[in-house]
Length: 532
Ligand code: ADP
Ligand code: XUL
Image 1 (cartoon, rainbow, N blue to C red):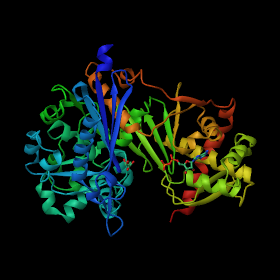
Image 2: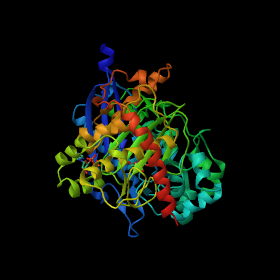
Image 3: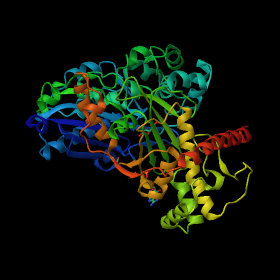
Image 4: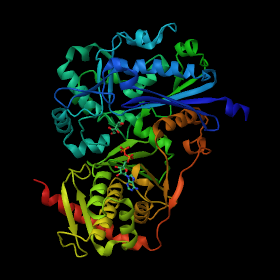
């Protein structure tokens, strides 16, 4: 037991606005947390929300040296707070997905012999060929996306292989842009990292491999063979395979910590670095999603995470390799019309009160007497469509619903859509499936009841403010346990669990079975009518 509480595991998260760390002990209890805010703690980099939005409004970058300096500050802060680095057995972490870092020729040598008397920021000053790293908020590469899809025979072909169609933020398209506009910089680059593998490289004191899960967000990796696709590499930039090196499993122990941290912070020589991954895969680990589970985040926008065994990539949604089980996959589906649309309907139909909104849900029947509504106030991501559509029980268009019917139609419609799209990507509800709900609207039990009824599964709530960070501390524990053949679920079995919120209403399945089919049909119909 002494051994369990004496050991620490660290999870770092290099996210858009801050660098965070969580330490857990061997009993998986959080013992320390800290963070560095880029805008306020590092004002010299003049970022807003951690990024620079360029004049064209579509180019978005972050200074790579800001991330390095943030790590110096965070580790100093932990030292001042009395954190005992000598007990750390393993570190892992995550980074905002898709962003890329360009290491200059010779940087590897510098990384391998860092002087522990100096800060990382000073030591790595001249190590980057590109100072301003493109990040996920960038949307300046429409032309490169077109080229890439063209090179592989179309959007569906690219999706079939890499798990996603071409997206502007995805790394291949960002690399293609750098090659085209800054060819000298590209040629000076000896290694291209993702934000996650860049951060791992700092701890390793050498270039860290890109992991399969974050590597799936690049439009470059064949998610089934887990190798770079030659066609995608060729369509992106020359000599790219050698600049990326081979990706590795997300659970890999990459090696021991760089002597820099041993000497400067007193960390143990045999402390291991477990592959870093993307923040969304990190969150999946933090929520301890299991096979058959679905996580629904009801925030400003709605996001759905799925654990999938047999994925069927579709042009809407993303399939990534699973970060905790290399035989499985995870899917990510994003919806723009989430809480803001719920708020609009609340304002129009429930006098701006969530109480009244809930009363309307409680007093209207499961299945809404066959009425279905589709509310895309803004152009939706999944599917790409806009407009408000209402149908009666015979699929006839109607122009308005009563306030009560409108409220239920919105909530049922949003959740029917999530189940229809999840199943299109290969998701199946199995015995023991749990729906994990997070985000602002997950405090509303009446909304959760509809979610539970549509999925015919119990809904659990979970606090995920730091899920990526916590998930990576769990992944650090699992990295060591995996070497002894232990699964992620076994390794983190003792961690605090999610809270049961609601169970499905008896009979709900019979009502929603036919409605799911009708929803899928009506959405198809709308797409056919509205596509050019
Ligand atoms: P973000 O995506 O910015 O992290 P949050 O997860 O904090 O957002 O969610 C904020 C949203 O939660 C608000 O826009 C609001 O619509 C919604 N919300 C807050 N309370 C309730 C409630 N009682 N019922 C339904 N939605 C709620
Ligand atoms: C996912 C995505 C963002 C980033 C930033 O595809 O672009 O969620 O990972 O957090």
